[in-house]
Length: 97
Image (tube, rainbow, N blue to C red; front, side, top):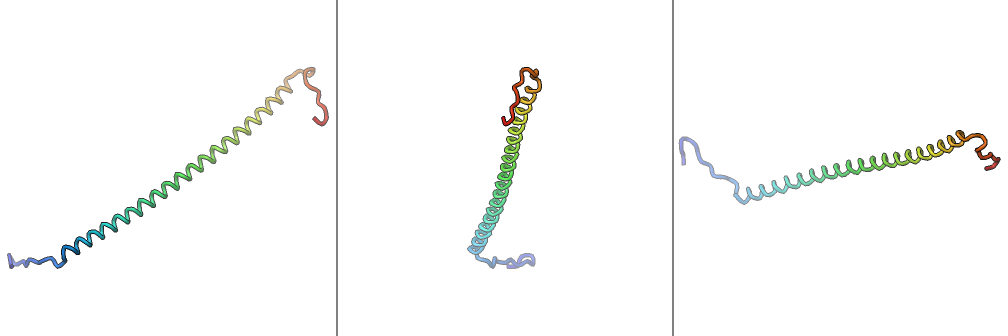
């Protein structure tokens, strides 16, 4: 039992306990990984949703500006046509029209 002054020791834990501890450790690592992945996925989806909302809002604002500019351009064109017509071709202005 003694070789070169070193005593050999027998493992004091039963191999079944080692298997149970290893299994529980694996379950814990898997659970922590799952929670981490779920939180990262949720964060990513939230950021994507925020970017989509920002894009939709910007697109809505662009559409409103486009419509406003078209209305402005139509009014400007109409006014310019009235100004450019010779006085004898202008329609007479009547109060209340």
